[in-house]
Image (tube, rainbow, N blue to C red; front, side, top):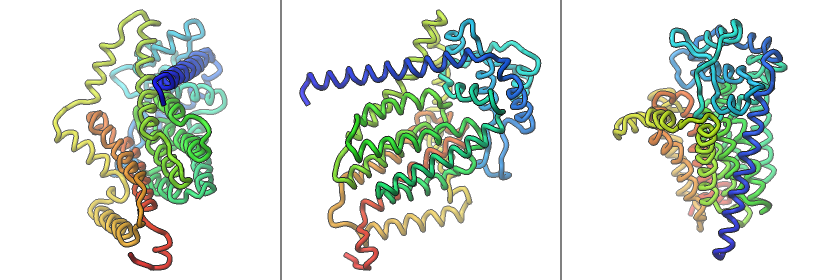
Length: 419
């Protein structure tokens, strides 16, 4: 590719970013025009439902991997309920919600909806794009209904993704994703809106990426640019990396199986650019709309999320997340089970290895390391919120299955011919 073509491609990416940014921001602003009165009854029901539990509680006593976060859900509903038809752009940038320091967020939400309190606490560092879905759904149902709808959607989208992968004869990817989701406690995800969004997006992104890799239609790097933008738009800093790692690994595996290649490094970089670009765009737009410099507020929270810079603290954050994954969540017995699994995987890869191993097998470990790097960089956040950030490690399980698939020869396994 010559210099002119590279410049043209970069301009195309800028155009894609600008178009996607406009569409997402416009959708958010338009959602702020929905009147509170149309949501009031269902929002009140949601607030009362959330007050039945603590802001944090374990579905299985003493098991942090089952912990449910209703703190973030209450804040999201408070932001979603605070509509403003007079200044929707300003409202969309500030993302105000009702807050008091003397009671929890569930009670704050109830007071806001029931008593008409004035929300004055801004939460502008995130886009809170998921508030669009909350507003629309609260025209018809409350949060309990949303939990059930999200559970059905999660199951449906995951099954459709697996069916598509099997249809494309990518059974190893289907098995890997299934194992990864189960190890990451997917069954607990629908109990919290905060947990759900990434696991609803990941199957859609995976199918799109695999289709592009198999058919060769479309620019996969531009696709991952948009993936990163949408991820940032709806995420609340949870398991954001799964919209990069799992779709990317499946696309690489699909391309290899079909005798092709994809620009995986450019795709990864495009996702990062889309993700960080959306965050920077929010801060810049908010500064312009609100007429104030929001960067001191933003940088203070970035510093808070990184926390203690010592290697010991970063290691603790990583270990805390890993300890929630199956089978490690079951203590000493789980450690033994993991060692048996890894030993068996190493045995299969060595005894039944292919004569020629594709270089693409090196990409999977690199993808598996991405969530670990995220834990190290945002160590304070990963340490405190390990009970949901650990689910990003579903990518590591998927990577292990793809490594085994790429390194072993099925003919040797089924015919018992050792090399």
